Image (cartoon, rainbow, N blue to C red; front, side, top):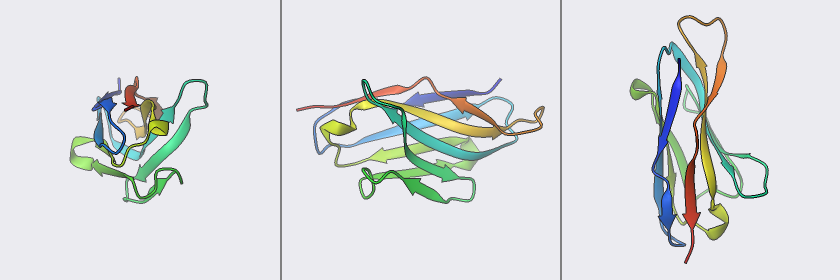
Length: 121
């Protein structure tokens, strides 16, 4: 059974920084993509950043230049460095990974439980 465990959320002042981590564990053959999503109260869940196994990245326009996604393939871990945080960044942040297990025949999406990020003066 694959599990994603997130950490690093919390309360921060505008202009501050946070670093989110998401570690995948279990029977994993490979991870194609690891993504971060955010969901603010009353809003749809939306993609914040994505990174493939080859290192290609994509960012939402609202976070370009402020957030950086990276991954450590040896540890099956993805990071989101969040700088110059704004109140509108306040949301629950969810980790997503498309994973091929040793026992599986195709990629399967997995979600973390989410970590709260609050940006407030």
